[in-house]
Amino acid sequence: MGKIRLIIWREYITRVRKPSFLVMTVLGPLLLTGGLFLAGTIALQESGKHSALVVDESGLLIGKLKDSDKVEFSYSEIMVPDSVFAKGPHTLKVYVPANVTYAPKAEITYKQSPSQMVQDQIVSQIEKLVETAKLERDSIDQAKYEGIKTDLKVKLYDIKDNGQESHDQVKALIGFGFGYLIFFFILLYGLQVMRGVMEEKQSRVVEVLISSVKPFQLMMGKIVGIAMVGLTQFLLWVLLSTVLGGIGMGLAKDQFAAFAQQKGQGMMTTELKTEVSEQASLSEEDAKKMDMMKEGFAIWNEIPVTAVLLLFVFYFLGGYLLYSSLYAAVGSAVDSETDSQQFMMPVMLPMFLAIFVAQMAIVNPDGPAVFWCSIIPFTSPVVMMIRVAMGNAFDHPWHLVLSMGLLVGTFIFTTWLAGRIYRTGILMYGKKVTWKELGKWLFYRG
Image (cartoon, rainbow, N blue to C red):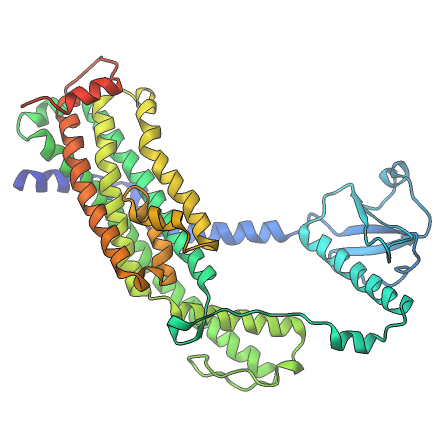
């Protein structure tokens, strides 16, 4: 154990002292959050204000479409050919046929592609005007129609959770985020294990190391040392994210209370449990904002944060140790990354399958594919995190226990298997290794 500890410390301290580790640990969450925010902001921005020429053969829209900061309208009751539009000053041409009240279709031709937001603004206004025209055509009273028209809002309630409103899909998305982090860490640090083994093999440093330690000790020291690097980085990310998240949550609560007070709803409690009264007095947009903020806080309070983080650490370590042992075996068997490609795909394929099934789990968490992939050790680190975030795993504790037990058992088996390949392959040079050759190494004695 003393030799393994020395190897672990060497792998750990060598990587932690690298400037790249310090930069990514401190700036990683900030760069990721800032990058997502910047990308979202840029994606929502228009390259310029659109000028839309509305060719309205029906005559229903003339002068009735409202300009906005993203689009302004001008009108024509006769068809404007594309050749004329192409030479004109307008960026969009909106064609509405004469029979639009019977065949509700329209066309948008553009010089500069409009964003989905601009398209929605145009379409929603046309829909309302056409709807009003159809009511007048059929002599239907507008007020009565509005009273009859029903916008059904459906909420899900889980009887097992004391009849509380369910936010399973949002929690599944959060679980998917944790699962994707595991996938990312396994891929990143697993490759570090493989490259580290290959570098020592190519430089013949391993020949010196093997003279004083056993191959299995060297492999385990490298795997555990790099795992500690990944875990250290993750814990520092959690600490930094918790601080930033706490500040953000505090600001959001203050904004929510101020927003409610501004709208005449009174101050909210710190737990934000007071129902908003006189909801009808709010505009539709304001009501949606308040509902979204309330729902966000409700979801946050429902998630078992401590359990999710502890199980994340378990599945991160379990998945990493499982795959890193295989990466170490691959690194010891080949002389270059080019030669490793034939072995990499079978190793990584289960993880890509896990990501695919995890996406399915967001909309169908109780499906058979989700169940089996949350149990099978090669996919469970990613898929089980979705069930954990949703609380589904705690409803079936034996599923969770079985998944964790199989992951530990499979890691022990793959480590033994990889150790037999590693002890032979680490000293093998200049030979093209095949799957058949790897099979023979498993049964070598010594």
